Image (cartoon, rainbow, N blue to C red):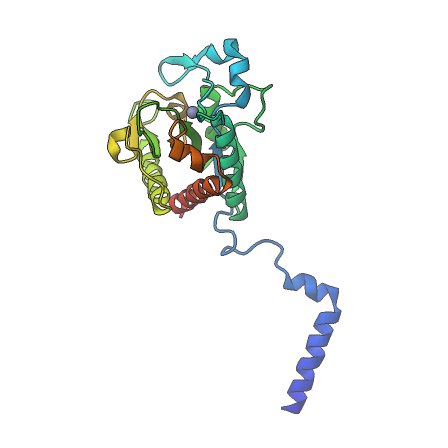
Amino acid sequence: MRLAGLLTAVLLLGGLASPAYAERAEPATPSRAAAPLEGRVVVLDPGHQLGNHNYPRRINRLVPAGGFRKACNTTGTATNGGYPEATFAWRVTKLVQARLERLGARVELTRSSNRQDRWGPCIDERGRAGNAAAADLKVSVHGDGSYAAGARGFHVIAPTDRRPWTHDIYRPSRRLALDTRAELRARGLPVANYIAGGDGLDFRADLGTLNLSDVPTVMVELGNMRNPRDAHRMTSPAGRATYARALAAAVRRFLG
Ligand SMILES: [Zn+2]
C-alpha cells in the first residue's frame, strides 16, 4: 500500500513537471460531446443589407427567382422608431453564428457587413448560397412589417413542392420549419396572429431565396417590427438573444 502510494505520488509529480504530459492531457480537438455539430456546414442569410435603399437601381434589377424573375432585393422594413430590419437580422445572425460555432459547426454568411454604403447580395445569390458550400441547411433571418392593427408574432416560411426547383428540398425544409417553430415556441415567443393561418407556418412558391436552394432551407420572420410589443423585443439585446438561442437550437434539433 505504502509503495503503491509512493509510486502514485512520483507519477503525479512527474506528470505535473513534464510539459509533454500536460500537452497530452489536453485533447487537440474538442470532443464529440463538446462539439456536436463538428463537420456540419450552416449558411445563415441575414436579410437585407442596410444600404439597399441607397442603391435603388441595383436593388430593383430583375434576377432569376426559380422559373420567373423578381427584383434583386428590397430595403426591408423597420420599427416605428426607425430601427432597421437589416440591423436586427444582422445582430441576431451574428449571435446564432457564435452559438453554432461553439457547437463545432462551420458557418457561412451571405453578407459580411451591415453598412449604409453596401447593397445586396440579390435573392438569387442568397438562394444559391448553401449550394456551393454543400451546406447541411440554410436559414434566412428577417423581421416583418405589417401595419395591420395588433399584428404580431413570428412565422416560418418553407418552400412548396415546385419541380424542378424545390422538389429535392421541400420535405426536409418542412421538417426544418417545424423544428424552428418548435424552438421559437419553446422560448415563449408568440406565433403570428395575422398571417400564415395562425399556426406560424407558411409555404410559399414566390421566394427566390427559397426556390434556388439545393439544401434544406427556411426563412423566418421573427416578429412584426411595426408592432410595439414585438419591436420592444426585437430592439433589446435580451430579446435578440432569445431569438438566437431558438434558432441555434432549431439547427441542432434538425441536424441531431
Ligand atoms: Zn425582410
